[in-house]
Structure formats: structure tokens, C-alpha cells
Amino acid sequence: MATAPNVEVEAAKFLLKLIQESPDEPAKLATKLYVICQHMKLSGKEQSLPYQVISRSLETVIKRHNLDINTLKTSNGGL
Image (tube, rainbow, N blue to C red; front, side, top):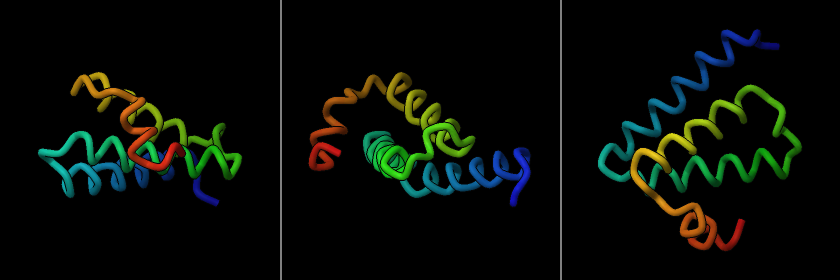
């Protein structure tokens, strides 16, 4: 099992990859992060470090780009 620092590094690498895939599309990035968070919630992983990192990243993207969380919810079939 990975230690907490290794999990943080892997989460950071994953998030960097997502950001690079949609550098000029913050709504697309937020949607990806939202879907990942919802999947992790349904899997009971809300207390895990990766969930916390991804959730905080989602909050940051939403705040930085003034996105509407309700728009993300409806664009994914209400997940």
C-alpha cells in the first residue's frame, strides 16, 4: 500500500495530466474532477486522501473560474 506522500505525488501527477489535457477549458476540467469525486463518493472513499485532494482541486477550479457547480451536476446526468 502506498504511503501518504506517495499518494499525494501520484494525485498531483494525475491532476497535472488533466490540466494539461484541457488548459483552456476550465469547465471541462471541473467536469472531469466532479465525475471522479462522485464516483469516489459512491465507492465510499470520501475519507481517502486522493478524494480530498481531488475535491479541493475541484473547489479551486470552480472558484478561480467562477463556475457554477449546479451546471456541472446537470451536465453529467445529475451524478
